[in-house]
Image (cartoon, rainbow, N blue to C red):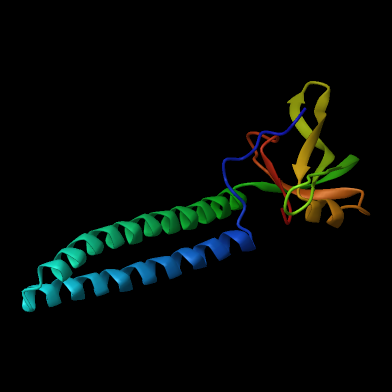
Length: 172
């Protein structure tokens, strides 16, 4: 049985790098839009039709790009806030690692191959008359997380109280 993936993306260095790039893109787009307005104003002042049309076409396009980048930026920040509030509403438990699986998939393109790594975790299930049932769930993890838990017998997870199969492995 495989775990249900959470709709939340995990905030990583890559996410913060993308946010920084988007902030730079917004600032750069707004700077260029200001330049477009300068061309428009210069064209009107000097009665130069070509410069005015160039500024008129360039400015809305750059403002649109800045707006789209701001939308992406806000979406990423909202996603990080949702993840943190979800983690605050979860419970943290220590679950045993039952098995591991690692496979290297060779690729002959740029960048070589990639690793596919899984950890088999014994997750507490639903409460029954006989007690709590346990389920073994194979969770796909990154190579970094796989190596981090290589010598360990157990892993901490943050899981939803209502749905124990919706979880995030600590440091994932």
